[in-house]
Image (cartoon, rainbow, N blue to C red; front, side, top):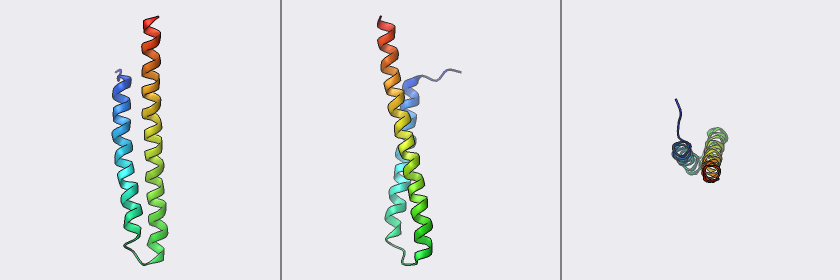
Amino acid sequence: MLIPIKFTGIASMVFAGICLWFAIDGFISLADNADPEPISGGRGFAWFWAFLAAVGFAIAWLSWKFAGTQRENEDT
């Protein structure tokens, strides 16, 4: 089964957006908690989702870049 490269880019952007939303929610919810123990675990949770968002954006960027390269090669 072949997945079009543009669909991969769009799916990666959706994935990255969802991960970024979880990361932002994790960072914002840290301000609501006064207990230091859950704050340290919550910070790690939020950074993990931020890392996943960065990976998703990188995959989306690479997908779009490769899609443009494929089009240039087809024209020649």
